[in-house]
Length: 179
Image (cartoon, rainbow, N blue to C red):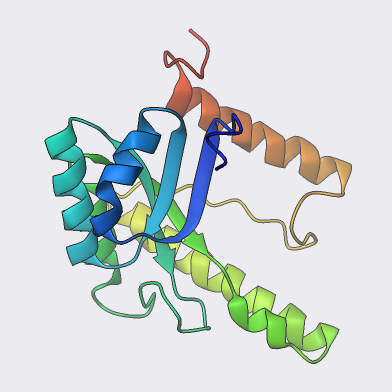
């Protein structure tokens, strides 16, 4: 539907079953698509499907930051191995980590919401740092004084500069980037 409407960059922030590989491959031919993975076996199935099709797709590893619905356990001793293994799979381009603190929908006060957000941010910072220390490149950008989006000018400048740096590194020489 989004691709049919001309949307050229689509991120699906939830895991996809590899039984949908034919549909995903058809979308990859028409738009820039990314989605999350949170299990090594599922990531390997996606890798196999994309490799057979001669395609690549961007993936992010979903991190469970407290809602316990999906995502890898960041405190598991296997977390880094899972991320490293997914990052090395052919047919998948590892683009980083993604979290969503679904439990915040049930916060009863601003203070409770703030504590949940701080916990999510700390969890992601810690995991990103572990990844970097172990040779898995992950850039982490967060502004403690912001929510979703940037409202403060200094954060807009820093945040959008980081986005431009990322796009330049990852799209240069592609149809969507500069040459």
